[in-house]
Structures are given as C-alpha cells and as structure tokens.
Image 1 (cartoon, rainbow, N blue to C red):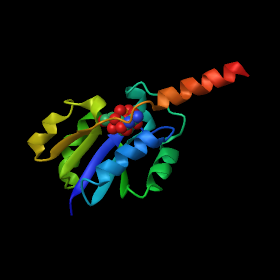
Image 2: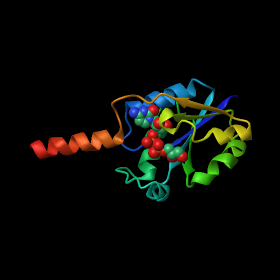
Image 3: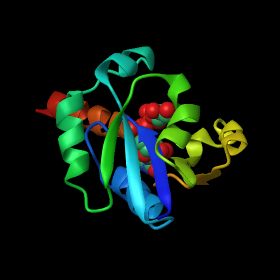
Image 4: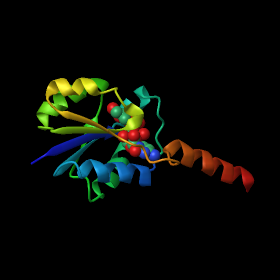
Amino acid sequence: MKRVITYGTFDLLHYGHINLLKRAKALGDYLIVALSTDEFNALKNKKCYFSYEKRKALLEAIRYVDLVIAETSWEQKRSDMHQFCISTFVMGDDWKGKFDFLEEEGVEVVYLPRTPEISTTRIKEDLELLKNKE
Ligand code: C2G
C-alpha cells in the first residue's frame, strides 16, 4: 500500500485543486490530505470563505481522497510522514524546494506543475469585478 500525502487550504475548491489531487493519487494507492485548519490559515494570513468543516466535507466527497486530517502547524510534516506511513509527499510546484528536507524522513518528495490560470484568489478577484459591473 503506497500512501501519498499532500497539504493545503483548498478553499473555494476548483479544478486546479482537483487536478493536483488526481495526479497525487495516481502516484500511489491511498491519498491523505492534510487540510489547513481555520486557526492555521490565520497563521498563513489566509482568510477562507468556507470553514474547515465545510472544506473537509468537500474534499471527502472527492473520489481521489481517502482520508482528510487536520494541518495545524508548519512543524507537523516530519512526524506525519511516520504516523501515516507515507511513501510520497506531493505539493504543487509553487512550493518547489520548500519541503525537500522530508527526504530525510525517507519519503519521496514530488512537486507537480500547478494548473495555470486558476486560483482561489483569482476567483475572488473576478467575482469582485463582476459585482462592481452590476
Ligand atoms: N494548486 C495547483 N494549481 C492551482 C492552484 C493550487 O496545483 N491552480 C495546488 C497548490 O500548489 C497546492 C494545492 O493545490 O499544492 C492546494 O493549494 P492551496 O489550498 O493554495 O494550498 P496552500 O495554501 O499553498 O497550502 O503546508 C503547506 C500549505 O498548507 C499549502
């Protein structure tokens, strides 16, 4: 059983997130998503539209996702690799190089190309423009 993990906020879930999760799952047999809590997002200076519970429910409905756990700190990754018997750690390549240290824990670190054009920020900005046009 090859277990894969990825981390993120996944607010206003969109096809860029789905593309990432689909490719991450294809790297193994079991995909865990460590979902940023509302409190951790405050540390990341991210204001979410959906609460943790709603973002969790959305992710759990995705066929590629096998388990959603909480991401509560920057420091939990090393221990997560062992606690969840992870083979492969995956992130979009906007994080390229930032988590290479996890190779010291015996896991493969993979950065996947981001899906261009789409982001939660872009969605919010475009909606704001639409609202101002009304
Ligand atoms: N992503 C992507 N393509 C996009 C948008 C996002 O591949 N167009 C990927 C990101 O690279 C990330 C994942 O989707 O791997 C989740 O994106 P965010 O929710 O923005 O995650 P982030 O806030 O970067 O949190 O400890 C790590 C952090 O929790 C990552």
